[in-house]
Length: 395
Image (cartoon, rainbow, N blue to C red; front, side, top):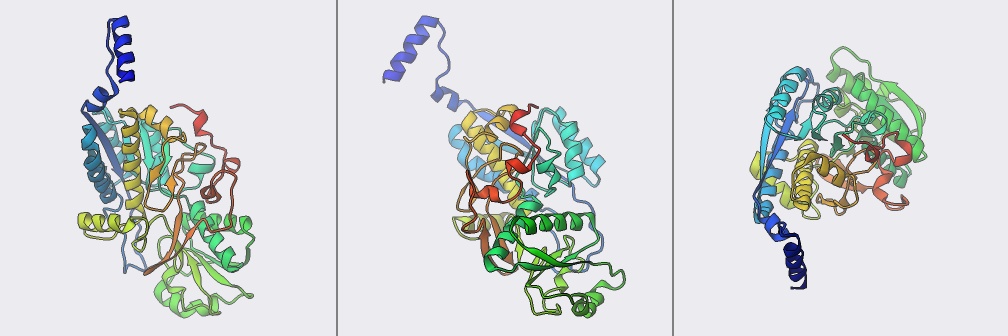
C-alpha cells in the first residue's frame, strides 16, 4: 500500500503515470527465436549401430519452446521457434540472413566452428547461442562477442575425464588418436588434461590403417596396443572410425575411455537424477528417441533465453547478453547445481556426466577438486587461462 501511495504521488507530481510493474508484466510479448542447423556429411562410418539423429539439436529446441510457453503464459509471453537447416554453410547463411531481415535477433546455432564464425560475423547485432561446436579456440582465444556456449567444450569434457582418472589413480595413459582434425583437437584437450591433473601419456599412437578398418580394428588392435605398462587406454575418435573396437581388444586388460568406452558428455540417456528423468520422458514423447548432448545444449539455449526474457520483461539481444554474462541469471539444467555463463568466454558452467552406453558412472567435477569461486570452473578454460574477456566487449 505504501508503495502504491508513493507511486501515485510521483505520478501526480509528474502529471504522467508510468506503467507499473504489474501492468508491464501483463503486456503480451512474442519472443521469436531462430534455430540454425548445419551438419557436414560425416562420410562412411565404421560403426553405424547408433547413428547420429539427423534432427539432433532441433528437437531439443522445440521441446524448450513448449516448456517456455507453459511457464510464459502466466506473464503473457509467447515463444516461437523458426528453424532453418542448410545443406551447405552458404545455404544456411542465406536462410539466416532472411530470418534476420524478418526481425529475428536471437538464434540457437547447431553448426561447426567455421560456420558459427561466419554466422556471428553476418549477424553482428544478434545473440547466438552455440549448441553444436565444442571447439576450444572459441572459448580460449578467438571468442566471438555475440556468441554464448551451452555445449561443453572439448577441454571441459577432457578435464571431467582427467579428474575421474586422477581419483581412480589411473595415471598412465596409452593415447590413440584418429586422423581427422576433430580427433586431433580432442587429443589436444586430453594432453592438456593430463598436464593439469598429473597424468602421464606413456605412449601416443596415431590410427593410420586405411584398409578394411573393421577387420584392422579387430585383428590388429592387440598388437597395436602393445606398449609400456599403462593403466587406461584413451581414444580420440570423434567420428567412430575405430574406437568402438578398442574395448576388449587391447594387449593389456585395461579400461578404455575418451570418445569411446567411458565417455564424458554434456548429456546422456542414463542421466536421471534431479528431475532429469522427467525431462528425458518428455523429450522421448516429443521426439520418439533419446535425448543427446546436442538436443540438451539446444534445450538449454532456449531455456536460458526464456529465463532472461522473464527477468527482463523484454527480448532485446543486448540486454539478454549483458544479463547472461552477469551473476544474476542462474539456470536450472537438471544437473544438481545452478548453472551460469562464464563472464570471460560465455561458456555455460555445468557438471559433466561420465557414462558408458548403459549406465552413468560418475559426474565431474570430482570431490576434492577445489576452486576459489566455483568448482565448475575446474572444467575447461578458467579466466586466467583464456584470452577472452567478453564482459569487457560490446556488440
